[in-house]
Length: 476
Ligand SMILES: Cc1cc2nc3c(=O)[nH]c(=O)nc-3n(C[C@H](O)[C@H](O)[C@H](O)COP(=O)(O)OP(=O)(O)OC[C@H]3O[C@@H](n4cnc5c(N)ncnc54)[C@H](O)[C@@H]3O)c2cc1C
View: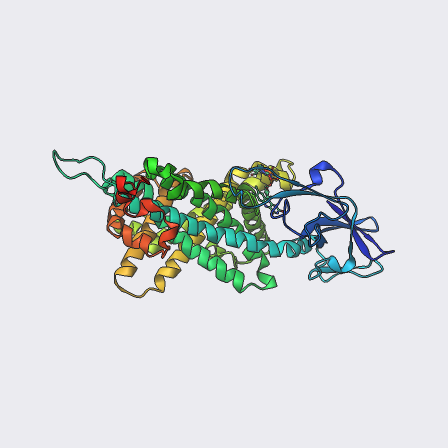
């Protein structure tokens, strides 16, 4: 897309210069939207001023497409077909000067460019800042749908019996099989932990200031990616954990899974977002080292302290200590940031550009992005737990926090690969996962009920599904 300013008429002229510049996937565009906000490069008198945002009418009030605008439907999708996504081409569409969203920069009637932000990169970031709300709502929404999937699958596992382990003994509830606990309860613990992180993100967004743009960008990018990946994985596991009944549309999990897949792509592809997170962490690292300064913000203050020491033998009580859990998560993040900075710098020393050195170091960048997110999630969960003063609730939250911590250690290979955990310690972690699952098991129903999901959002499988499938329920 390109936008030129015509100072003769004080109008912006919006144009799609080639096919690959068409606006694709625009929500509401195919059938309904009357106006759109176009993000486009702005050029005045041959000078490119970077991306700016313009309001443009694309349909009149009767739904007719405006002159010089072409719109086509994106077609049937694998999910989210309730949204009419469209493609838009602009053929020199003229909009008045006032249609520039001018909180960051403005253009006078005679074409003078005015902005208080000199640095083009900072201006770009300021223009894109309003888009953060999309990432915040997607991250928060991902936790809600994980809760729905887990409530359905866990309630089913507490009513469905399969096989007995003793001759003529009662059949065993699915959730009493340790393997079934291992499939669902760590996802439940992660969902609780991520709920704290989502609340933290919401409050950070509500209290935002211009100077917090960078932090919100990093935190919302990291959490959007992590929480939506978790959501997709959770819904997939819950779908399978409901067996054949998961396939029934009325039981919702399959439908949610189909609708939700796109979360990893829109409002920023998850992989690309994670690269951006590591990019910002690296820039912060370089700035601190260059000025011999201390880390401040982004939760990296732990980098100013001495490196944590991990005990050579991990007992159950050490593994359940929040201090130990934070230590090992911080150690992994610190180690990966050091390694990532070293690898990029070595590649630069061999003659690669900074950008290409970063691109080549993608493995560490991705490990680091996950380490940043996991540490942030654990930190917010510990803060939530600290607001609960006593009693069984605190004890259950402690179990969930420990299960979250040990499952991350078990699943995230970077803990072992970079030596934060020895193989002996890794074996202790694995054992603790199983133990914690069995201790969370008695609380499973209360934990999913406490999500407060209305019955209508759970589907028959979460209730008396035998009665719901009885002959009497058949239309006769
Ligand atoms: C249902 C739906 C609704 C949408 N709604 C809107 C909307 O309302 N408004 C709007 O403006 N947009 C909308 N989008 C667009 C959406 O934001 C983009 O599809 C998304 O940002 C990914 O861009 P892309 O499709 O060009 O993917 P591509 O850029 O083609 O990416 C393909 C793959 O390549 C990888 N990749 C891309 N670049 C890099 C890189 N630099 N380094 C490493 N890997 C890379 C990505 O990880 C991805 O897996 C919507 C998309 C969908 C599917």
